[in-house]
Amino acid sequence: MRVDEALCAAPVAGLSRQEARTLLGALLGCDSAWLIAHGDALLDAAQQQRWLDWLRRAADQEPLAYLTGQQEFHGLALQVTRDTLVPRPDTETLVDWALQLLPPGGHLADLGTGSGAIALAVKHRRPDAHVAATDRSEAALAVAKDNGRRLGLSVEWLTGSWWQPLAGRHFDVLLSNPPYIAAGDPHLPALRHEPLEALSPGGDGLDDLRRITAGARAHLACGGWLLLEHGFDQAEAVADLLSQAGLAQIQHRQDLAGRTRCTGGTSPAS
Image (cartoon, rainbow, N blue to C red; front, side, top):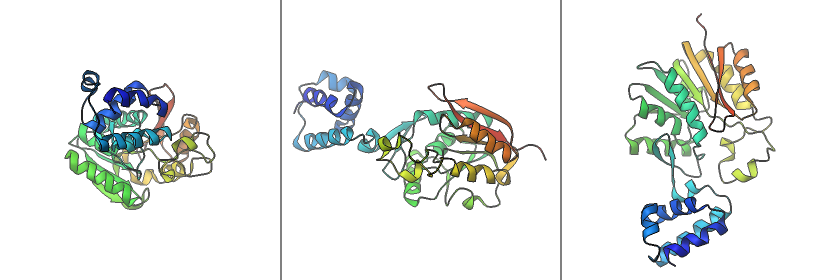
C-alpha cells in the first residue's frame, strides 16, 4: 500500500483529509508536507497492518488520541491512555481563567486530574506556582506522573477522591473538570471508549459538582477561587451550588463555541 492509497482509504473510517494526514504522519513519524511529497512511498507490512487496524478503530469512533497515544493541550504534547479522558480544547478555557487569578507564587490544586492536562498546563505557564493534583484512579495518576516527568514539570501528585487527599490544606485557586454528563445523555454512546467514571457520575450529572462545591470553602484561602468546568446547560445549576456553598462574585466563562462552559466563585473575606 502506498501513502496516497492509505490516505484514500481514510474517508471510509469517517476521517477528514487533515485527520488522515495527522494520523498517518504519527504512524510513519513524518509531517503532512512529507506525505504530500511522497504519495508513492510504500508502507511496509507492519505499517500497513497497523494502519488498517487504526482505520477500523477510528470507524468505531475511538478517539484518535488513543490510537497515537498523544494529545496536544495548551501547547503541551500529552500522553493519554484508555485510563484517562482525552483532553479537550474547551478545557483550555479553565486553564486560562486560573492563570489570570493565580497570584505570584500561589498555590493551586486540580481535582480529578486524569492525564494531568490542567495541572501541567498551569505549571508550564507559571513555574513559580505550587501545583497539586489529585485523582482517585491510580492508573490515571500514573499517566499524569509520567507526563510530568517527561515534560520536566514538577507537580505534587496525590491519590484520593476529591478533598480527601487535601485535608487541612488551603489554596489560592482550586479547579476541576469533574464528571458531569447525566445518565442517559444521548452523547454518551459516542464516548464509549473513554472511562465512564470520568464522564458521568450518573443521575442528573451534578453529584460530583455537589461534592466539590460543598467542601470548597474549607480548602480556599481568603479570596481564593473555585473554578469548575461543566455541561453547556448546567451553568445556572452550578452557580446555585457555589452560592449555597457560601462563595461570592460568581462568574462564568465561555468555551470555543461560545457556550457557557465554566463557572467559578470566590471565598469572601471572613
